[in-house]
Amino acid sequence: MSLKAAATAVRLNAHAPYSNFQVGAAIRAASGQVYVGCNVENVAYPEGTCAEAGAIAAMVAAGETRLTEVFVIADCPSPIPPCGGCRQKLAEFGAGDVTVTLATIDGHEQETTIGDLLPGKFDASHMDRS
Ligand code: THU
Image (cartoon, rainbow, N blue to C red; front, top):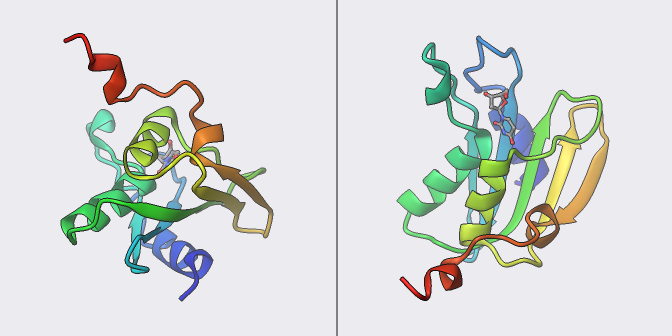
C-alpha cells in the first residue's frame, strides 16, 4: 500500500472529538515496512498525541529506529504543516534529506524534507560539554 493510501485510511481512525481535526500519518522504515498513526486526543487536552507521534511509536515498538519517507494528511486549506514537536520527533529517526509529503484530503500536496522542516535542530552534539 502507498504511504498516501495508508495515511488517508488511518486518518479516519483519529480520535479528535475536541478539535474535530483528524490527521493521518504514514512512515516507511528502513526495512520498507509502513507504520501508521492518527491523532488521539484526550479530555485533558495536553495529553493528546499527534498522528506523526503515533506512527513513530508504532515503528519503534516494532523494533525499527530509522525512517526513510513520511506522508501526513488532514482536511486543511493547505497541506498540513507538522507541529514543532513532531518536527523534532521526525528528526530523531530520519535524516535531513528524508522526504516529507504534506497533503490535504482534496488532493493538494507539498513535498519537503525533515531538514527543511527543522533547520538548526537540537541534536546530541549540543550536549557535548555536559
Ligand atoms: N495534529 C497532528 O496530529 N499532527 C500535526 O502535525 C498537527 C496537529 C493534531 C493534534 C490535535 O489532535 C489536532 O491535530 C489539532 O491540533
